[in-house]
Length: 295
Image 1 (cartoon, rainbow, N blue to C red):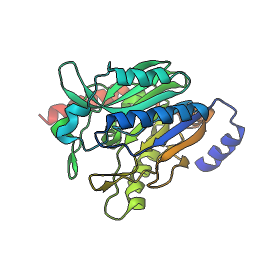
Image 2: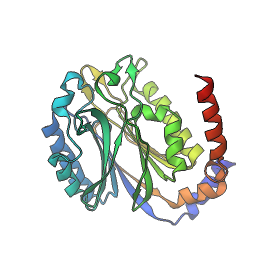
Image 3: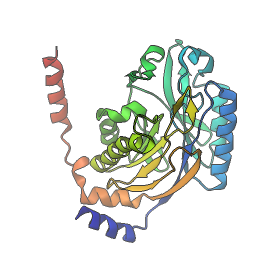
């Protein structure tokens, strides 16, 4: 029945249409200058294609497996390179990933939201995978805040890769009033190939969208780094959990998707439990009990 409702609402929807750009690129590992030029080119191209919001993958300015090279590739949030990119973000809002160095010289896997020539938000990744091929906990500090940012499209939240696999992160952002989740990732091809590797990602992102009545924009990198291939296949999911559009597996490029923000309004009318009926006091009380029981 939900699918029928959704289809009928889409034909009636006449709200604000927003064009999202999925910058499914293959950054050069440690090649910040090359990656800066690639970002500049994509931002200018997005401007020419009338993109409202351009989203890059996780660590798009540096590449992923930085290891001991992290200090060389890292930039402070006030660095001229980031400010130069922000100056290009006049018509098109931009979200990019970078290795951030704090004033205390702690390094973070971070994302910056650029709009109207300024850096509006820096989000530091809170959950760092340190298992299998992932060694982020060795090189990065953990972020300690989860906050959205107010934009001309409504409140938007940034989720960096592993954070999407922790239900608390999308939950907190949704309860804060976020309407669009921006999930930036470095999702590798694992055993079984690219198609099998992307399936768990698309399932969980569809679920987040439906549970929280939000749009989810997923941008995953492409290319090969240190012998690891990344599957790309960026995608957008609507508040009913359906896939609006997806980019190709493996290929690099800029892919655009038009989304109707009125669909979000209709989803929240039909399925209001995500926000209207959520009992935060109950959640806080029970979480406190669980934390105490764990000692």
